[in-house]
Length: 508
Ligand code: BES
Ligand code: ZN
Ligand code: ZN
Image 1: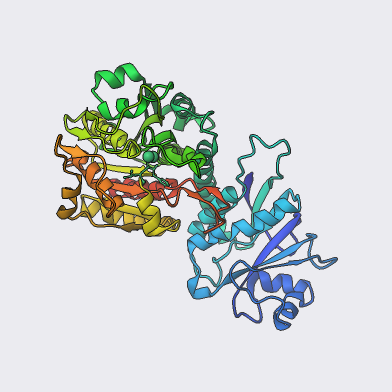
Image 2: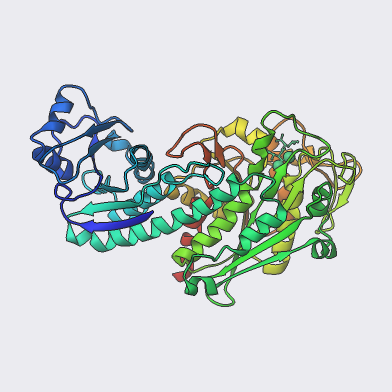
């Protein structure tokens, strides 16, 4: 999809459909909507007056003017209450628009920038979110569809204020690039598990710089390590989980050196279980197919590196993704086994289905040793308990460092990807103490998200670290929060915002 700015008057702009907006309760629209209304001899005002259209959030009114405006279709989009409007709603507003355009097989959609007028939003930021929304709404995993769904070819913002041209253009460019990286991650998550096994995820990561400019690509380095190296480094967690599969594990490492040479590193560790059957502690059949998304944390962290390179964030960032397939077989690890992790700690396995923490712990230890990162963030579809606690609205967040936690909170707020902190009180650690080894890999039925994080904390050591449990938000069954059903690409947007905060902080 081409996303572009066109300076001019939306009344005279020619596209397959033009989009204007209305806040709830407004009886006489002003701005661009007012201009279109006047050109249509009061058609919008009449619809409001007669109660056909109220401007409620997500409400649409499609008009087919025969004269007055240059385009054959005018869509009036309800933005809801003005006080409640936000940047993330600018993104979400794109979904009904793009969806309608796709249904009508329209090639070009032109819209005003929502919220930049009486909404009072910063135009550059609003443009970012508008472009992001357009790119994300146009996404579809159609690799296996014989008949491909229609996509919108061009999404234009039409603006008549010359002073806003430069900030809007900048915002659009940024949003489009981040959106592309989010969709890149979503494609990996959508891939059937037989298509994307650990080596497949590694191959995709190898192509992470593809499509980016040469300047960005030069600062990217992707390395993939195989079973031999993983053995040599004593990564007992990754080896144990990977043992049951014919497809051997991989350790994927993707760097973007956007910061100053020799400057500090930020490490992003992402769970890359390409399929989680539960292993010997087999999951029930119902819904198991969904466990292809158990690599969403890994895809998200790789996507964040791609996005950081695409928009040129001045940070040194590395994604470390342990990729395994958790399968039951004669070679699989068993409940009762005790494994020695890279850090030297021993872990008693009580459930082979609590595999994520085992591979993440080794990847975190490796990232610490190789990069001595100033900050480490991990993302994982780690616990069903997090889905119970926070649903599919908000990701769980736990960490060992107040400063890093507040940066992630800030990034969450700005990006619109919701995160909520859970406690890491000392008392919870009792639940993961083992009789036979140092730790056990499950902490009982209570506080499952917290005890999983307690386990990881043992491997973060003194590195400032935040864990994001994205089990609930990485895949949504129903349309929600401006996403069609399917993978969301979480937490790419949050991480990109966090990295740009870091970039700004370092520049000071
Ligand atoms: N990948 C799952 C977590 C998960 C569950 C993600 C549901 C998305 C939806 C993870 O590996 C797992 O199986 N966790 C277990 C842990 C338990 C055995 C302590 C869980 O949450 O049930
Ligand atoms: Zn599992
Ligand atoms: Zn899992």
